[in-house]
View (cartoon, one colour):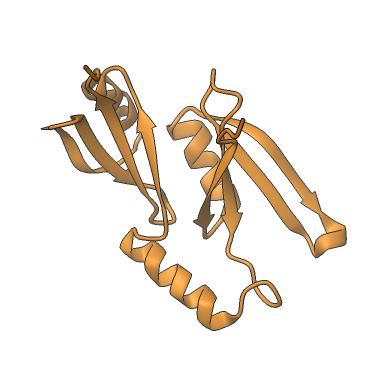
Length: 140
């Protein structure tokens, strides 16, 4: 059986991303290791409390030889527009979660709205990644 284990978001600053995802979104750090033998490469993952089998890799934009500067610039440009990746977070009560997160300092770009599939809202992380917070309606 194949399952979803991790997904990745590019981030400008891993320390800033770690603080945002843990302190503002309430996630927990799963792994945070720096491998000096790989040039100081840092593997940082976070995930929702109570959902230990899923994590988000908060990946710094690499330099040469992994990624050339032109590609890195394209990634940064897409991040600034909110199009380098999207995470969809689920909640049982979008309005309550919206209030909780705004009280923690999360700035939403879309307030909760009724959609055909549920109640949906969105915000961006400090790197510009688009994050949707959704209360999905029960399927028939």
